[in-house]
Amino acid sequence: MGGLGASLASPVFANAPERSIRPAPKLLDFSERLIPSADALIADANLGGKIGFVVAEAKTGLILEAHSPVLPLPPASVAKAITAVYGISSLGLEHSFETRVIATGPVEAGVVQGDLVLVGGGDPTLDTNALAALVKSLKQKNVMTIKGDFIVDGHGLPYQRMIDPGQPDHLGYNPAVSGLNLNYNRVHFEWKRAGEDFDVSMEARSDQLRPAVKMAQMQIIDRKVPIYTYEDAKGIDYWTVARGALGKGGSRWLPVRRPDIYTGEVFQILARGEGIRLPSPKARSDRLEGTILASHRSRPLRDVAQGMLKYSTNLTAELIGLSASASRGSVPGSLMESGAAMADWMNSELGARRAFFQDHSGLSDQSRVSANDMVKALASAGPNGYLRELMKDVTPLDEMGRPINDAAYSIKAKTGTLNFVSTLAGYLTAPDGRPLIFAIFTADMERRAAIPKAERERPKGAKGWSRRSRVLQHQLLSRWALEYGT
Image 1 (spheres, rainbow, N blue to C red):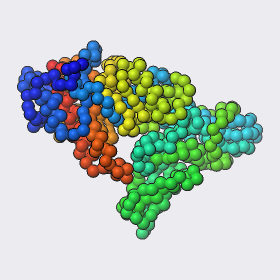
Image 2: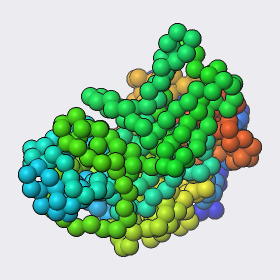
Image 3: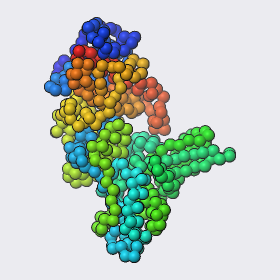
Protein backbone atom coordinates (compact mmCIF):
# COMPACT_ATOMS: atom_id res chain seq x y z
CA MET A 1 0.00 0.00 0.00
CA GLY A 2 3.00 2.29 0.44
CA GLY A 3 3.17 3.10 -3.25
CA LEU A 4 -0.51 3.88 -3.69
CA GLY A 5 -0.17 7.60 -3.10
CA ALA A 6 1.70 8.20 -6.35
CA SER A 7 0.74 7.86 -9.98
CA LEU A 8 2.23 4.73 -11.57
CA ALA A 9 2.98 6.37 -14.91
CA SER A 10 5.87 8.84 -15.00
CA PRO A 11 4.73 12.39 -15.84
CA VAL A 12 5.35 13.41 -19.44
CA PHE A 13 3.54 16.72 -19.73
CA ALA A 14 3.40 19.54 -17.20
CA ASN A 15 -0.22 20.18 -18.24
CA ALA A 16 -3.00 18.29 -19.96
CA PRO A 17 -2.84 18.27 -23.76
CA GLU A 18 -4.81 20.87 -25.70
CA ARG A 19 -7.25 18.18 -26.86
CA SER A 20 -8.47 15.26 -24.79
CA ILE A 21 -6.91 11.87 -25.44
CA ARG A 22 -9.49 9.72 -27.21
CA PRO A 23 -8.68 6.03 -27.32
CA ALA A 24 -8.89 5.77 -31.10
CA PRO A 25 -6.64 3.18 -32.77
CA LYS A 26 -4.32 5.80 -34.25
CA LEU A 27 -3.34 6.90 -30.72
CA LEU A 28 -2.67 3.50 -29.26
CA ASP A 29 0.78 2.98 -30.78
CA PHE A 30 1.93 6.23 -29.20
CA SER A 31 0.19 5.91 -25.85
CA GLU A 32 3.44 6.13 -23.87
CA ARG A 33 4.11 9.57 -25.35
CA LEU A 34 0.55 10.89 -25.40
CA ILE A 35 -0.91 9.91 -22.02
CA PRO A 36 -0.47 12.67 -19.39
CA SER A 37 0.20 11.66 -15.82
CA ALA A 38 -2.51 11.76 -13.19
CA ASP A 39 -0.50 14.34 -11.26
CA ALA A 40 -0.42 16.61 -14.32
CA LEU A 41 -4.19 16.28 -14.78
CA ILE A 42 -4.83 17.10 -11.11
CA ALA A 43 -2.59 20.15 -11.28
CA ASP A 44 -4.27 21.36 -14.46
CA ALA A 45 -7.75 21.03 -12.92
CA ASN A 46 -6.80 23.52 -10.19
CA LEU A 47 -9.59 22.39 -7.87
CA GLY A 48 -8.00 22.91 -4.48
CA GLY A 49 -9.36 20.88 -1.60
CA LYS A 50 -8.77 17.13 -1.53
CA ILE A 51 -8.76 14.45 -4.23
CA GLY A 52 -8.75 10.69 -3.79
CA PHE A 53 -8.97 8.03 -6.47
CA VAL A 54 -8.32 4.34 -7.08
CA VAL A 55 -8.50 2.29 -10.28
CA ALA A 56 -8.18 -1.49 -10.09
CA GLU A 57 -8.54 -4.63 -12.15
CA ALA A 58 -12.10 -5.86 -11.81
CA LYS A 59 -11.20 -9.55 -11.94
CA THR A 60 -8.31 -9.60 -9.46
CA GLY A 61 -8.77 -6.41 -7.42
CA LEU A 62 -5.19 -5.44 -8.21
CA ILE A 63 -4.78 -1.69 -7.72
CA LEU A 64 -3.30 -0.14 -10.85
CA GLU A 65 -3.13 3.50 -9.79
CA ALA A 66 -4.17 5.57 -6.79
CA HIS A 67 -3.98 9.00 -5.21
CA SER A 68 -4.79 9.45 -1.50
CA PRO A 69 -6.64 6.12 -1.63
CA VAL A 70 -7.56 5.90 2.07
CA LEU A 71 -8.55 9.56 2.51
CA PRO A 72 -12.19 9.64 3.72
CA LEU A 73 -14.28 12.13 1.72
CA PRO A 74 -18.02 12.79 1.26
CA PRO A 75 -19.35 10.30 -1.32
CA ALA A 76 -22.36 12.51 -2.27
CA SER A 77 -24.81 10.49 -4.39
CA VAL A 78 -22.25 7.76 -5.07
CA ALA A 79 -23.54 6.53 -1.68
CA LYS A 80 -26.68 5.41 -3.52
CA ALA A 81 -24.67 2.61 -5.17
CA ILE A 82 -23.99 1.17 -1.72
CA THR A 83 -27.63 1.74 -0.74
CA ALA A 84 -28.75 -0.28 -3.77
CA VAL A 85 -26.57 -3.24 -2.77
CA TYR A 86 -27.57 -2.91 0.89
CA GLY A 87 -31.26 -2.87 -0.01
CA ILE A 88 -31.12 -5.75 -2.48
CA SER A 89 -28.92 -7.87 -0.19
CA SER A 90 -31.39 -7.34 2.66
CA LEU A 91 -34.74 -7.45 0.84
CA GLY A 92 -34.10 -9.25 -2.46
CA LEU A 93 -34.30 -8.16 -6.09
CA GLU A 94 -38.01 -9.01 -6.31
CA HIS A 95 -39.07 -7.24 -3.12
CA SER A 96 -41.93 -4.77 -3.54
CA PHE A 97 -43.33 -2.11 -1.22
CA GLU A 98 -47.01 -2.46 -0.31
CA THR A 99 -49.49 0.30 0.57
CA ARG A 100 -52.71 -0.99 2.13
CA VAL A 101 -56.21 0.27 2.90
CA ILE A 102 -57.60 -1.48 5.99
CA ALA A 103 -61.08 -1.43 7.53
CA THR A 104 -61.30 -2.07 11.28
CA GLY A 105 -64.90 -3.15 10.95
CA PRO A 106 -67.13 -4.83 8.36
CA VAL A 107 -68.65 -3.06 5.37
CA GLU A 108 -72.43 -2.92 5.72
CA ALA A 109 -74.66 -1.20 3.16
CA GLY A 110 -71.66 0.74 1.83
CA VAL A 111 -70.54 1.93 5.29
CA VAL A 112 -67.33 0.81 7.00
CA GLN A 113 -68.37 -0.01 10.57
CA GLY A 114 -65.17 1.36 12.07
CA ASP A 115 -62.07 3.19 10.93
CA LEU A 116 -60.51 3.25 7.48
CA VAL A 117 -56.70 3.14 7.68
CA LEU A 118 -54.24 4.02 4.90
CA VAL A 119 -51.07 2.14 5.87
CA GLY A 120 -47.75 3.05 4.31
CA GLY A 121 -45.22 0.35 3.50
CA GLY A 122 -42.29 2.62 2.73
CA ASP A 123 -43.03 2.79 -1.00
CA PRO A 124 -40.78 5.50 -2.46
CA THR A 125 -42.61 5.49 -5.80
CA LEU A 126 -46.23 5.87 -4.64
CA ASP A 127 -47.89 8.61 -6.70
CA THR A 128 -51.28 10.18 -7.20
CA ASN A 129 -52.13 7.69 -9.96
CA ALA A 130 -51.58 4.78 -7.56
CA LEU A 131 -53.79 6.43 -4.91
CA ALA A 132 -56.51 6.84 -7.53
CA ALA A 133 -56.30 3.10 -8.26
CA LEU A 134 -56.69 2.32 -4.54
CA VAL A 135 -59.79 4.53 -4.42
CA LYS A 136 -61.29 2.71 -7.41
CA SER A 137 -60.72 -0.60 -5.61
CA LEU A 138 -62.72 0.74 -2.65
CA LYS A 139 -65.53 1.76 -4.97
CA GLN A 140 -65.61 -1.71 -6.46
CA LYS A 141 -66.21 -3.03 -2.95
CA ASN A 142 -69.17 -0.63 -2.67
CA VAL A 143 -67.59 1.50 0.08
CA MET A 144 -69.43 4.84 0.23
CA THR A 145 -68.50 6.24 3.64
CA ILE A 146 -67.15 5.26 7.05
CA LYS A 147 -68.53 5.33 10.56
CA GLY A 148 -65.23 5.99 12.31
CA ASP A 149 -62.08 7.95 11.50
CA PHE A 150 -59.94 8.09 8.39
CA ILE A 151 -56.46 7.31 9.71
CA VAL A 152 -53.10 7.63 7.97
CA ASP A 153 -50.31 5.42 9.28
CA GLY A 154 -46.74 6.26 8.29
CA HIS A 155 -45.07 4.85 11.37
CA GLY A 156 -43.70 1.71 9.77
CA LEU A 157 -40.51 3.71 9.23
CA PRO A 158 -39.17 6.64 11.30
CA TYR A 159 -40.40 10.12 10.50
CA GLN A 160 -37.83 12.80 9.76
CA ARG A 161 -38.78 16.37 8.89
CA MET A 162 -36.10 16.60 6.20
CA ILE A 163 -33.20 14.46 5.05
CA ASP A 164 -30.47 17.02 5.75
CA PRO A 165 -31.25 19.85 8.22
CA GLY A 166 -28.34 21.85 6.84
CA GLN A 167 -30.13 22.54 3.55
CA PRO A 168 -32.55 25.44 2.84
CA ASP A 169 -36.22 24.68 3.54
CA HIS A 170 -37.47 25.04 -0.04
CA LEU A 171 -35.35 22.41 -1.82
CA GLY A 172 -37.55 19.72 -3.32
CA TYR A 173 -34.79 17.12 -3.15
CA ASN A 174 -34.69 17.44 0.66
CA PRO A 175 -38.21 16.40 1.73
CA ALA A 176 -39.54 14.70 4.84
CA VAL A 177 -39.29 10.92 5.24
CA SER A 178 -41.87 8.55 6.70
CA GLY A 179 -43.46 5.17 6.10
CA LEU A 180 -46.21 6.79 4.00
CA ASN A 181 -44.98 8.98 1.14
CA LEU A 182 -46.46 10.48 -2.02
CA ASN A 183 -44.99 11.99 -5.19
CA TYR A 184 -41.50 11.85 -3.66
CA ASN A 185 -42.97 14.05 -0.90
CA ARG A 186 -43.19 17.09 -3.10
CA VAL A 187 -46.01 19.48 -3.98
CA HIS A 188 -46.16 21.28 -7.34
CA PHE A 189 -46.19 25.06 -6.94
CA GLU A 190 -47.24 26.98 -10.07
CA TRP A 191 -47.84 30.68 -10.63
CA LYS A 192 -49.35 32.49 -13.62
CA ARG A 193 -49.85 36.17 -14.35
CA ALA A 194 -53.42 37.39 -13.78
CA GLY A 195 -53.48 41.10 -14.52
CA GLU A 196 -51.33 42.84 -11.92
CA ASP A 197 -51.31 39.78 -9.69
CA PHE A 198 -50.74 36.01 -9.92
CA ASP A 199 -52.88 32.90 -9.84
CA VAL A 200 -51.19 30.35 -7.57
CA SER A 201 -51.78 26.61 -7.32
CA MET A 202 -50.41 23.92 -5.00
CA GLU A 203 -51.10 20.47 -6.46
CA ALA A 204 -50.30 16.80 -5.87
CA ARG A 205 -49.56 16.54 -9.56
CA SER A 206 -48.97 13.36 -11.55
CA ASP A 207 -48.90 12.83 -15.30
CA GLN A 208 -52.67 12.17 -15.21
CA LEU A 209 -54.12 14.02 -12.22
CA ARG A 210 -53.78 17.44 -10.59
CA PRO A 211 -55.65 17.53 -7.28
CA ALA A 212 -55.23 20.82 -5.40
CA VAL A 213 -54.26 20.47 -1.73
CA LYS A 214 -54.82 22.64 1.33
CA MET A 215 -52.11 21.22 3.62
CA ALA A 216 -49.53 23.17 1.59
CA GLN A 217 -50.33 26.88 1.13
CA MET A 218 -48.53 29.75 -0.57
CA GLN A 219 -48.70 33.50 -0.05
CA ILE A 220 -46.99 36.09 -2.28
CA ILE A 221 -45.18 38.80 -0.30
CA ASP A 222 -43.89 42.17 -1.58
CA ARG A 223 -40.17 41.72 -0.98
CA LYS A 224 -37.00 40.82 -2.85
CA VAL A 225 -35.35 38.48 -0.38
CA PRO A 226 -35.57 35.90 0.97
CA ILE A 227 -37.22 34.24 -2.01
CA TYR A 228 -38.98 31.61 0.14
CA THR A 229 -39.88 31.26 3.80
CA TYR A 230 -41.44 28.23 5.49
CA GLU A 231 -43.47 27.76 8.67
CA ASP A 232 -45.20 24.74 10.15
CA ALA A 233 -48.60 26.25 10.92
CA LYS A 234 -50.29 23.54 13.02
CA GLY A 235 -49.59 20.79 10.51
CA ILE A 236 -49.95 22.99 7.43
CA ASP A 237 -46.91 23.74 5.27
CA TYR A 238 -47.20 27.51 5.08
CA TRP A 239 -44.95 29.09 2.45
CA THR A 240 -44.32 32.64 1.35
CA VAL A 241 -42.55 33.71 -1.84
CA ALA A 242 -41.06 37.03 -2.86
CA ARG A 243 -43.12 38.75 -5.56
CA GLY A 244 -39.97 40.09 -7.17
CA ALA A 245 -38.72 36.58 -7.93
CA LEU A 246 -41.79 35.37 -9.83
CA GLY A 247 -41.36 37.09 -13.21
CA LYS A 248 -44.18 36.34 -15.66
CA GLY A 249 -44.90 32.82 -14.45
CA GLY A 250 -43.35 29.47 -13.70
CA SER A 251 -43.39 26.42 -11.44
CA ARG A 252 -41.23 24.32 -9.15
CA TRP A 253 -41.53 21.40 -6.76
CA LEU A 254 -41.48 22.20 -3.06
CA PRO A 255 -40.90 19.65 -0.29
CA VAL A 256 -43.69 18.30 1.88
CA ARG A 257 -43.03 18.14 5.62
CA ARG A 258 -46.05 16.01 6.67
CA PRO A 259 -46.22 13.31 4.00
CA ASP A 260 -48.76 11.19 5.90
CA ILE A 261 -51.28 14.04 6.09
CA TYR A 262 -50.47 15.03 2.49
CA THR A 263 -51.15 11.51 1.24
CA GLY A 264 -54.32 11.29 3.29
CA GLU A 265 -55.69 14.57 1.95
CA VAL A 266 -55.07 13.54 -1.65
CA PHE A 267 -56.73 10.18 -0.98
CA GLN A 268 -59.74 11.99 0.51
CA ILE A 269 -60.00 14.28 -2.56
CA LEU A 270 -59.80 11.37 -4.99
CA ALA A 271 -62.38 9.42 -2.97
CA ARG A 272 -64.78 12.37 -3.12
CA GLY A 273 -64.46 12.28 -6.91
CA GLU A 274 -65.64 8.66 -6.85
CA GLY A 275 -68.57 9.44 -4.54
CA ILE A 276 -66.88 8.14 -1.38
CA ARG A 277 -67.18 10.47 1.62
CA LEU A 278 -64.26 10.47 4.03
CA PRO A 279 -63.48 12.80 6.94
CA SER A 280 -60.17 14.66 7.11
CA PRO A 281 -57.21 12.35 7.76
CA LYS A 282 -55.82 11.82 11.25
CA ALA A 283 -52.32 10.55 11.97
CA ARG A 284 -52.11 7.62 14.41
CA SER A 285 -49.06 5.74 15.63
CA ASP A 286 -50.71 2.67 17.15
CA ARG A 287 -51.11 -0.37 14.93
CA LEU A 288 -54.70 -1.09 13.94
CA GLU A 289 -55.76 -4.52 12.71
CA GLY A 290 -58.52 -5.17 10.24
CA THR A 291 -59.52 -6.40 6.81
CA ILE A 292 -57.49 -5.34 3.78
CA LEU A 293 -59.89 -3.73 1.30
CA ALA A 294 -57.30 -2.60 -1.25
CA SER A 295 -53.55 -2.67 -1.74
CA HIS A 296 -50.93 -1.36 -4.14
CA ARG A 297 -47.50 -2.87 -4.72
CA SER A 298 -44.54 -1.06 -6.22
CA ARG A 299 -42.45 -2.43 -9.02
CA PRO A 300 -39.72 -4.89 -7.92
CA LEU A 301 -36.80 -3.44 -5.98
CA ARG A 302 -34.55 -4.14 -8.95
CA ASP A 303 -36.49 -1.55 -10.97
CA VAL A 304 -36.89 0.87 -8.08
CA ALA A 305 -33.13 0.80 -7.41
CA GLN A 306 -32.33 1.29 -11.08
CA GLY A 307 -34.57 4.37 -11.16
CA MET A 308 -32.87 5.68 -8.03
CA LEU A 309 -29.42 5.31 -9.61
CA LYS A 310 -30.57 6.89 -12.88
CA TYR A 311 -32.40 9.91 -11.45
CA SER A 312 -30.54 10.08 -8.11
CA THR A 313 -33.75 10.44 -6.08
CA ASN A 314 -32.84 11.07 -2.47
CA LEU A 315 -36.13 9.95 -0.95
CA THR A 316 -35.92 6.60 -2.75
CA ALA A 317 -32.46 6.01 -1.31
CA GLU A 318 -33.57 6.83 2.22
CA LEU A 319 -36.60 4.52 2.07
CA ILE A 320 -34.63 1.64 0.58
CA GLY A 321 -31.96 2.05 3.25
CA LEU A 322 -34.43 2.36 6.12
CA SER A 323 -36.40 -0.66 4.89
CA ALA A 324 -33.20 -2.69 4.60
CA SER A 325 -32.14 -1.79 8.14
CA ALA A 326 -35.61 -2.64 9.47
CA SER A 327 -35.49 -6.05 7.77
CA ARG A 328 -32.24 -6.85 9.59
CA GLY A 329 -33.62 -6.23 13.06
CA SER A 330 -35.64 -3.58 14.82
CA VAL A 331 -36.84 -0.48 12.98
CA PRO A 332 -34.11 2.18 13.22
CA GLY A 333 -34.95 5.32 15.14
CA SER A 334 -33.51 7.78 12.61
CA LEU A 335 -31.70 8.14 9.31
CA MET A 336 -28.44 8.55 11.21
CA GLU A 337 -28.96 5.25 13.03
CA SER A 338 -29.87 3.47 9.80
CA GLY A 339 -26.93 5.05 7.95
CA ALA A 340 -24.60 3.77 10.66
CA ALA A 341 -26.06 0.29 10.24
CA MET A 342 -25.38 0.45 6.49
CA ALA A 343 -21.80 1.56 7.15
CA ASP A 344 -21.25 -1.34 9.56
CA TRP A 345 -22.60 -3.70 6.91
CA MET A 346 -20.32 -2.22 4.22
CA ASN A 347 -17.31 -2.56 6.50
CA SER A 348 -18.09 -6.16 7.44
CA GLU A 349 -19.55 -7.51 4.18
CA LEU A 350 -17.96 -5.52 1.35
CA GLY A 351 -14.39 -5.27 2.56
CA ALA A 352 -14.46 -1.60 3.54
CA ARG A 353 -12.68 -0.42 6.69
CA ARG A 354 -13.70 3.13 7.57
CA ALA A 355 -17.03 3.84 5.82
CA PHE A 356 -19.41 6.13 7.69
CA PHE A 357 -22.88 7.18 6.53
CA GLN A 358 -25.11 9.87 7.98
CA ASP A 359 -27.92 8.88 5.60
CA HIS A 360 -28.50 6.65 2.55
CA SER A 361 -28.67 9.26 -0.21
CA GLY A 362 -25.35 11.07 0.28
CA LEU A 363 -27.14 14.39 0.79
CA SER A 364 -25.36 14.97 4.09
CA ASP A 365 -21.75 16.10 3.76
CA GLN A 366 -20.94 14.33 7.04
CA SER A 367 -20.78 10.88 5.40
CA ARG A 368 -17.28 9.63 4.63
CA VAL A 369 -15.93 6.91 2.32
CA SER A 370 -12.44 6.47 0.90
CA ALA A 371 -11.82 5.69 -2.75
CA ASN A 372 -10.13 2.44 -1.68
CA ASP A 373 -13.17 1.32 0.32
CA MET A 374 -15.49 2.23 -2.53
CA VAL A 375 -13.50 0.18 -5.04
CA LYS A 376 -13.45 -2.77 -2.64
CA ALA A 377 -17.24 -2.55 -2.32
CA LEU A 378 -17.73 -2.37 -6.10
CA ALA A 379 -15.41 -5.35 -6.52
CA SER A 380 -17.40 -7.32 -3.93
CA ALA A 381 -20.62 -6.52 -5.82
CA GLY A 382 -18.96 -8.03 -8.91
CA PRO A 383 -18.01 -6.52 -12.28
CA ASN A 384 -20.69 -8.69 -13.92
CA GLY A 385 -23.21 -8.53 -11.09
CA TYR A 386 -26.54 -6.78 -10.83
CA LEU A 387 -25.09 -3.46 -9.59
CA ARG A 388 -23.18 -2.89 -12.81
CA GLU A 389 -26.33 -3.55 -14.81
CA LEU A 390 -28.37 -1.20 -12.62
CA MET A 391 -25.91 1.66 -13.06
CA LYS A 392 -26.44 4.07 -15.92
CA ASP A 393 -24.25 4.46 -18.98
CA VAL A 394 -22.07 7.55 -18.59
CA THR A 395 -20.98 9.26 -21.80
CA PRO A 396 -17.25 10.12 -21.84
CA LEU A 397 -16.45 13.84 -21.94
CA ASP A 398 -13.61 15.77 -23.56
CA GLU A 399 -11.53 18.51 -21.90
CA MET A 400 -14.31 21.06 -22.54
CA GLY A 401 -16.97 18.87 -20.97
CA ARG A 402 -18.45 17.92 -24.35
CA PRO A 403 -19.70 14.36 -25.06
CA ILE A 404 -17.35 11.99 -26.88
CA ASN A 405 -19.70 9.82 -28.89
CA ASP A 406 -17.01 7.67 -30.56
CA ALA A 407 -14.94 6.75 -27.48
CA ALA A 408 -13.47 3.26 -27.62
CA TYR A 409 -14.20 2.66 -23.92
CA SER A 410 -17.45 2.59 -21.95
CA ILE A 411 -18.48 3.63 -18.45
CA LYS A 412 -21.20 2.32 -16.11
CA ALA A 413 -21.17 4.47 -13.01
CA LYS A 414 -22.90 6.61 -10.40
CA THR A 415 -22.27 10.32 -10.19
CA GLY A 416 -22.49 12.48 -7.08
CA THR A 417 -22.67 16.25 -6.66
CA LEU A 418 -22.89 18.59 -3.70
CA ASN A 419 -21.64 22.17 -3.60
CA PHE A 420 -17.84 21.83 -3.95
CA VAL A 421 -18.11 18.04 -3.81
CA SER A 422 -18.04 15.91 -6.97
CA THR A 423 -17.72 12.12 -7.14
CA LEU A 424 -17.83 9.33 -9.69
CA ALA A 425 -17.52 5.58 -9.15
CA GLY A 426 -18.27 2.47 -11.15
CA TYR A 427 -17.02 0.20 -13.90
CA LEU A 428 -14.81 1.06 -16.89
CA THR A 429 -14.47 -1.21 -19.91
CA ALA A 430 -11.20 -0.42 -21.68
CA PRO A 431 -10.69 -0.53 -25.48
CA ASP A 432 -9.35 -4.09 -25.32
CA GLY A 433 -12.31 -5.20 -23.21
CA ARG A 434 -10.39 -5.23 -19.93
CA PRO A 435 -12.80 -4.52 -17.05
CA LEU A 436 -11.67 -1.96 -14.49
CA ILE A 437 -13.24 -0.61 -11.30
CA PHE A 438 -12.71 2.98 -10.18
CA ALA A 439 -13.70 5.61 -7.64
CA ILE A 440 -12.88 9.33 -7.86
CA PHE A 441 -13.73 11.66 -4.97
CA THR A 442 -13.09 15.42 -5.03
CA ALA A 443 -14.07 17.91 -2.31
CA ASP A 444 -13.20 21.40 -1.12
CA MET A 445 -14.80 21.31 2.30
CA GLU A 446 -13.46 24.72 3.37
CA ARG A 447 -15.24 26.45 0.49
CA ARG A 448 -18.35 24.39 1.16
CA ALA A 449 -18.39 25.28 4.86
CA ALA A 450 -18.12 28.99 4.03
CA ILE A 451 -21.45 29.06 2.10
CA PRO A 452 -24.27 30.80 4.05
CA LYS A 453 -27.32 28.53 4.43
CA ALA A 454 -29.51 30.89 2.40
CA GLU A 455 -27.15 30.58 -0.59
CA ARG A 456 -26.70 26.80 -0.62
CA GLU A 457 -28.98 26.20 -3.60
CA ARG A 458 -26.70 28.02 -6.09
CA PRO A 459 -23.57 29.34 -4.36
CA LYS A 460 -21.09 31.45 -6.27
CA GLY A 461 -18.30 29.45 -7.89
CA ALA A 462 -19.81 25.99 -7.28
CA LYS A 463 -20.99 25.41 -10.86
CA GLY A 464 -17.59 26.14 -12.40
CA TRP A 465 -15.82 24.06 -9.75
CA SER A 466 -18.10 21.08 -10.46
CA ARG A 467 -17.48 21.41 -14.21
CA ARG A 468 -13.71 21.32 -13.69
CA SER A 469 -14.05 18.32 -11.41
CA ARG A 470 -16.11 16.41 -13.99
CA VAL A 471 -13.53 17.18 -16.68
CA LEU A 472 -10.78 15.87 -14.40
CA GLN A 473 -12.76 12.70 -13.70
CA HIS A 474 -13.18 11.99 -17.39
CA GLN A 475 -9.57 12.81 -18.22
CA LEU A 476 -8.53 10.26 -15.60
CA LEU A 477 -10.87 7.69 -17.11
CA SER A 478 -9.47 8.37 -20.58
CA ARG A 479 -5.96 7.98 -19.19
CA TRP A 480 -6.77 4.67 -17.51
CA ALA A 481 -8.54 3.30 -20.58
CA LEU A 482 -5.38 3.89 -22.63
CA GLU A 483 -2.75 3.09 -20.01
CA TYR A 484 -4.29 -0.13 -18.73
CA GLY A 485 -6.54 -1.34 -21.53
CA THR A 486 -4.55 -1.22 -24.79
